[in-house]
Image (cartoon, rainbow over all chains, first blue to last red; front, top):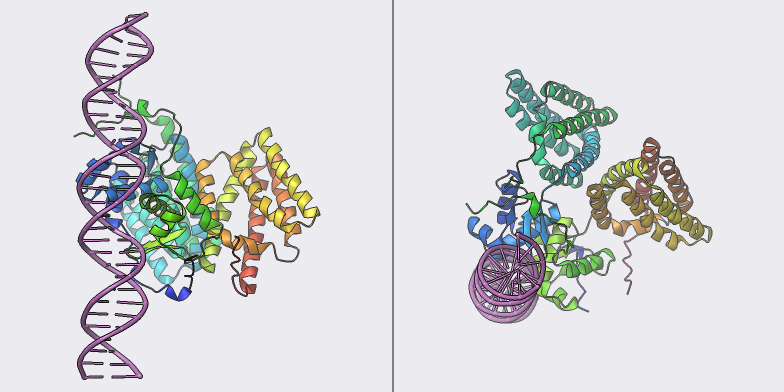
Length: 236
Length: 236
DNA sequence: AGATACCGAATTGTCGACATTATTGAGGAT
DNA sequence: ATCCTCAATAATGTCGACAATTCGGTATCT
């Protein structure tokens, strides 16, 4: 029975140097940005050379990414970039909506003046880019806005969770801004959310975020109906 | 460019034999059931012998559990059972509430006759045990009831997510049933949720689940105020 | 006595080698 | 032509050994 270690005094603050961070982070980035295509095989030896890291580190990274839902692993058959189906993407979006509503509510309750300043800054930029017709720049700012809300909510648990969710469904987000009239309404919805947070009105923030993400979901369904067939499965 | 592998035809259905499942599952079980105490060091060599598995497998399991939030790892300093603070536990409960509301809503929308039969079965058992004053047996059935709802919702994404959340805060759940009058009200709340699902009324299911988990949260806050000392009884 | 440097035990991180398993393609039988 | 067998190949899973690092205790100096 060597289980005699449980004093809380041992938990000193220290630089939280996590373990195999480098390779994990780079591999993750590669998957999210699409450098590895969905369903592509991830051979450990190859990755080992590409990231010049030992196979052990690659392996650990793959385990993490598996748990995170970005790759799938099968016994003796290796790892692949996980392909999330349309249905799954919708489910993920629903879950994300539930979490973001909570975060918006808490942000409205807890936001400091500094939080609001940051949020306003992003929103001002969004207005500018929208006015210039810069749709790409606008959709780049979109995640920034939401992340500011997560920060203001002071709920790391929910924040991290919604972050991993977003990484899973990120491939689908690019299509949504193509819908006619979508950017304009998107901007308006963000204004409403911002207003509710500034007013410190959790109920309104919840409702505004609900409406916003309901619109996003609807747009996503629209995009899925209209999407030209994914050019995966080539006709041989 | 050896990255020319992306046909969907390759994704055949097959037994999804995940990788190092055995050791991971046993270690996880050990942590959840409290055989390893919070903040206890998890030395790889020891675990290797205890679970008689290679150190490699133990290591992989620890990586997974780290990503899952059940252990924390620091570079060159090993792994410990993660201690979740009271504040974190409350945050987790809030997130869980948001997700379970979604799941209750979807369960009400999609539940089949079979789902409802299963759910009724659990509820009948709960009534019995409550009538017998069997508080322990009652709280054992509690997770079963919720899991049936997750199954009926047909939303694996949210289901798995709420499952991992629950495992993180499980240590706190034992205290809640000690509050005077809590079992009775808990049973009543479960009846309401069940009724809403049977009636296929998503709105009502959402509201009932919200009320239920709001009560749980309140009880949790109460328990935290009253906790003399977290008595980690060792179940050997 | 108190602070500091330092050494040794314990533990983790990493690498390479080997066994195990799946996959592919050729070849032969029906 | 189709199906089956079977070896060749490629990739993963696993084990052991070694280097690197942390931590506790001890000796040393002021």
